[in-house]
Image (cartoon, rainbow, N blue to C red; front, top):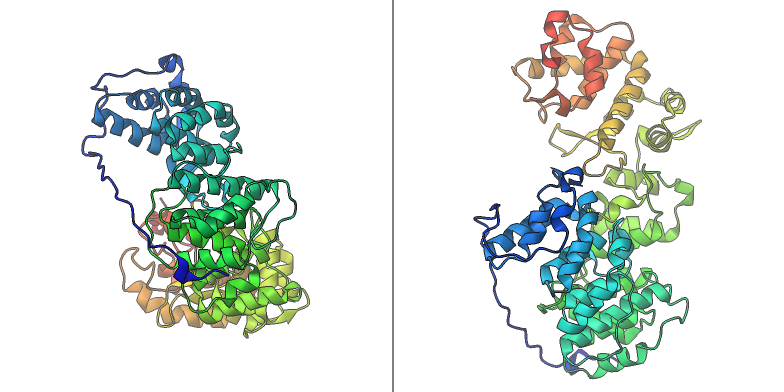
Length: 548
């Protein structure tokens, strides 16, 4: 059985600090002597796209990698990073660059290798466990794989860890264990583990499903027990876990290493603790994720996200709520634990979390568990109101069902539950339902518009409440000249109340001053722009200047 007292002392490696001078990155034409790949400047780069438009500078970036001038090389690195592999995205210029970067591999150009990896698997530093590969692989991975022989030849010549890593990400088999040096042995352990996870059908928290790749397991277990290098021991334990052979010894070693501070020079992880935490999380079953005492690394937040990713279905383009009657005991335990001890696992914006159908607000989680009160938890003839709004209205645009359900409850009270204050003592609102919004798209705005519009229709019989609410906020809105009210008033409810009155008999003139964007720029108003345009049409023509 694993005993932490048996571990050898760890000697952190010394690092060479290399600082690039970024003060003069933009420097075309190139200043040093270069040796560009043949045919580089014969491509019509201006007809291709990069992150910023036409890719006419891409050949300069590639040529700069061959320069004997450090400033030129910095210019090339900066350019390829920001334009051709921007934030993990790839472009037509990225594909065109592949054969030229492969030519530089034959010259053992390390930076060309880095950019080939980025073109194949996006932000390659996010690939820390086998199931990351599918998420990271880009549309051009197959094109890069055509040059795998060049990558392998470079690895054979130079021993560059990035070359070994790229081979694994491209699915190429590594050499046998062990290698001549501890670092190379650790890298091979991880390479074998990554490929065995694929070939053995290993998924997070599960045992192996086949014995397709097992020839390396005995050597890995021996290294885990005998190597004087903690780096090799940790990598060997990760290898066993990823290969589908997790046991108490390998998981205990990984969990112990995850608690420490072990800097290693490795392309897979920033330090040994991070590597160990990823492998331990991958290999531990659902119950084990919650059985660990305390809140050590990997912390409870991380462990809950792992459970959620396993237990809840993958999200499509639109969030689809899980019917309460289908909530399993394990899912209930996950949500209850999160609400009790780590609510940030519910409300966080972790990238993996955004791709599963799990409640993303505390209120939504309570409703899923059946532990919430209020109008949104009322059962109507169409189902639970919150479920009708989330699944019917927001996911399927079923306005008829939403209106029918709202007619059976206190719609005014329900509006206040949907657009709830972010803080108990504040007025800035957020949607308490689950709205799956991803960075860079307009999904949340569309959901806000759908909710404001459906409630405006549902509140036709609540004119008295709407007018009383608007009268309460009229002095606050009127005293501010301009659009600086974005976080100072409950703008979504004000906009909805105004629309409700306008649609159900007319908007009293005293409320006309409340029709404003609540932001200096109308397109960013807390009131959805289409609803704002609808309200502006109520105003006299000379009072609509804010929409011009």
